[in-house]
Length: 591
Image (cartoon, rainbow, N blue to C red; front, side, top):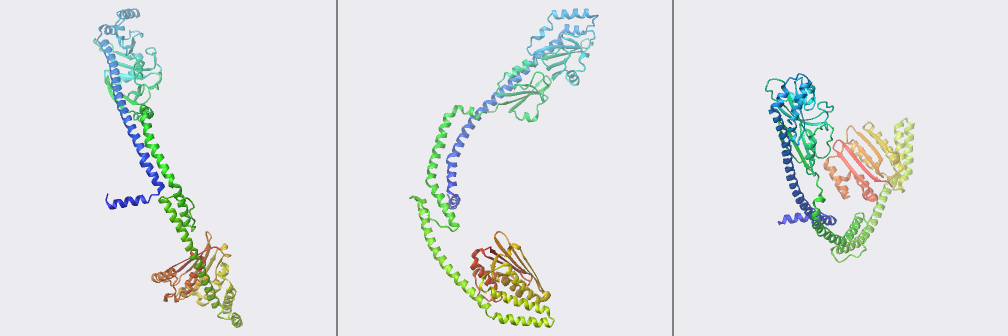
């Protein structure tokens, strides 16, 4: 085997779990051999059985064709004798003076056994001779043709182009001749020769339907047999053809269920034979081989299964327990496996896992301790920086100065300037109140943003429009103070101010799935792809040393505060297009 083929096989096997490998061994070593062995045996038995059945069906068809042709040929010979009999011809052509004259000749004909001699054939049931001679009296063998001219069998005979036909039919209200055993009839009909150009005569020989049916029913009952004429079921050995019912139609769907079919020519018409064997019971086929099959099942199934179960049990529980502990590791839970490991490869794996857990637990303890200390330092540093910014100006001095300026503007009639100065004073007052608090509510933060934007609106006049939307349930949730205003300030200074026609700032705060979503959107100048990529890289590295951050220090400061407090649960995304605007998306967990 080539090296790459070995590697491919190893790769495929290595990607299959041990439990599935055991199932694969079970299938390849137990199930498939048993199934294949049984299928070969059953197929061999059934194939031989099918061959025998087909031979039997072929012999049956040939036997049926022979018997039916023999019966029909006997009837044909009887009709030939009648057509050649001069006394019958004279009897039919004579014009009788009266009834006495007719009966005299009829009794003479009967006494000479001319008619009875024709009944030697077992297939024959009755003979009827019809003539146009009006002096013949209806009864016995001879009948007036006018009495049956409206019957279906006579109409079929007239429409046929042959001198003789074999016609099966069902006549519900039979009048001529007197009613026989059943209304199902198979008749041989032919016209008798008219040697003196006198009256027209027809002989109708009725075949013994139920004698033929009995012969067919005596065939092998394991075969379903149907004999049809013009797609009508004439004979069947299944007992579904009742004595006084019309011949049913043989449907195409029913034909497809038969295994073999053949046809033969009877007189001048085609007859079809259909045959099929009954469904073979597989248990009957293997009955004589059950001992061999039982031995094969015990050897090929029970013994390998027992071995596989014992081997699987030896390590399945330990693998399952190890897998459970590994799943806990994914969630940050490190627990030892407290069982008897064993001395095989799985035991070595469990001992290695326990050693790893101990070491990881020690390392995590050290890392966690250092991170907590670092976080405390960073938090203290950030808080000190904020307090330093807020305390650079004496608050009371600012309040009094701003209030004096506001009153002077009111006295001079400049209400717009007075309003903006009042907003600025409120901003400084809010900053001093926030000095001892790291978090504020969303409602407080947005009030601060509202005042800031009102001041910027005064500055930019018609070049700035803004809108603020907040879901009601978000207002009482806490977020880091000055988080939103940092990005709003950045949008005003670096987005709207640099755009000649100004732009719009939109702020949206919503909540979903236990998190707060903040969106700050502006239609300012935006930034090109290179600068945006650089900002993202610096955010990822927490790097503020590059010159690119001279105008965006507030963004990194806000990002560091997010990561310091929320770790990976706090998310910041920035999207921007040059001359189109910038979009900032912030996700915070609800606390």
